[in-house]
Length: 377
Ligand SMILES: O=C(O)C(=O)C[C@]1(C(=O)O)C=C[C@@H](O)C=C1
Image (tube, rainbow, N blue to C red; front, side, top):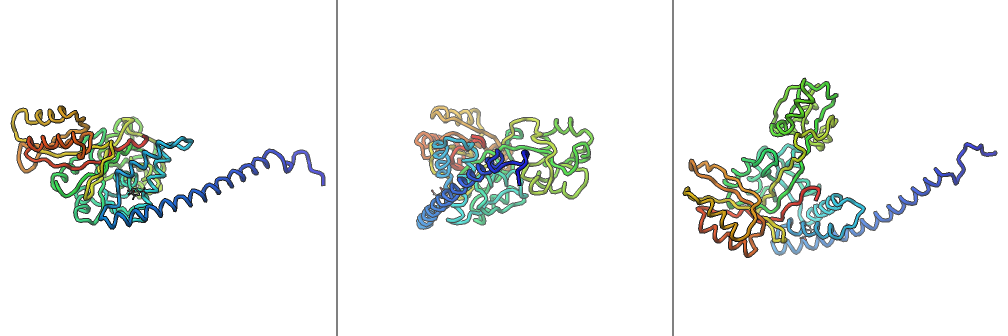
């Protein structure tokens, strides 16, 4: 039968396109097989490293080595993949290596899909086991009792400042945990609901998240009442059970609880980041781009803090964080928390610590650890 003019012939453009697509996909399939083979070869080497570490009584997670791996691959990377993608792939690979060596248990402040949980997943990947706790004290207790290998605790938020519960626990367990890694998590608040924005009558979230979105909520949801709850993830859970309600929470919480993202990035300040500490039994080896965290007390005399700061200045040490915190056991006394650039194994840091020992009533090195990159660095 004669082909009508409108019928595509076998070598028409759509057919060519389909053949092209099939050929390109065949190339991808071939690459995937080669990549998989290489990934499993890498994992087999990681398994051997695991045996060496077990023989030497070394811990599985090496924050310093993981930073080195990421730095190496980013330095060799030429695109077209985005660097964040490369970073995520290699973080996940190392999560898989650790799981082969010995599955790591990570304690975090719950519930699931809280920002602490997201920070923990960012550092430890999908192949770790996560234990959620009801409060920050319990994260420390899990690590101290060795029920968890590591704990993830929030230190400070760019809008709300320090996290009091965490600082208090460092005071309560001064020599029993060490900071081995830090995590910088961009906090992105969204309005989650299963109804239209105009139908929302109540908004739930954690106090801090509500305060970080106060102007947006007043302008865009004037009809809704605001209700603080224990966490952003809990707020998302509540939206599942009530009508005409919304939560301020993460995109991950929307996925977990099957909610729509009604409005994106609703925080009043465009930059919102929380810095977390990873606590464990030991701190981290030197990488060349490290930080050290200290906690100290000084006597109550004029100029005592200035003397301490002079020690940092004369050793050319850059402070990155300082907090004073009232000491519950003695009225009017303060404990200071300081972070600075450098590792406690560097000579100038050793000199600084020796001078501080002389000046301070108590001095605790909370740990040296690699400086965290921002999420998009
Ligand atoms: O180099 C090591 O110590 C390893 O165990 C290997 C490896 C990796 O997969 O590259 C895995 C886990 C460590 O935290 C660091 C790196």
